[in-house]
Image (cartoon, rainbow, N blue to C red; front, top):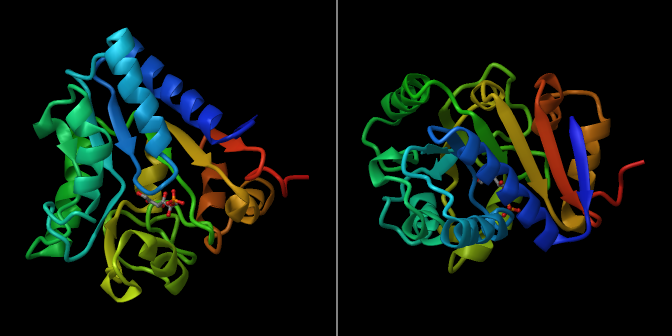
Length: 242
Ligand code: F6R
């Protein structure tokens, strides 16, 4: 793991956006793996700026998001599809039919999971996967206990994840309890991985990911098995590293 410690959220966001932009510049047909949540919002903002000011061109790229809530249609304001539209897709020139987010309200979810894995394979695999990290060490919605062999599937969200995500919903009861998520094996299949973490609430998970033994109890620690991972953390998220 390559560890990059930066001052704050702003610097983390800028560094991550530069990494993605340089990937797209060098290889216009890049397949991007994208995340939602609070952490990458600043990175998307910086990426939009790079598109507007420096003409970073996404017209030949494609994207696959990590996850989507089960039961939410793409039009639901709290769906991850809606988040991506709002925070990135509507501001850059990534072709709409090349942006992939699992369909959380598919009639046959198992079929949808298999279709998603197949679509990633058909695209030639993910070139660079962006990740955040849950307070409990989850990546994507691979909660503690997720197998290193897991692929895209329906997962049950833990209480702590539901509580952490309740800030986006009117009440905790409205937070879906399941999601479709890429598996650990899907994530480890990306050629490069960039994980972002900001703030003290992530410090323990960051320490276990970087310094702990690789274990399914802390899914992010399984990234130690990947040959090309860059972890960009701010000083607060790095505060428990020895
Ligand atoms: C989002 C995702 C999650 C988040 C994680 C951190 O697509 O898969 O793993 O990255 O829950 O969320 P934030 O950034 O909101 O702290």
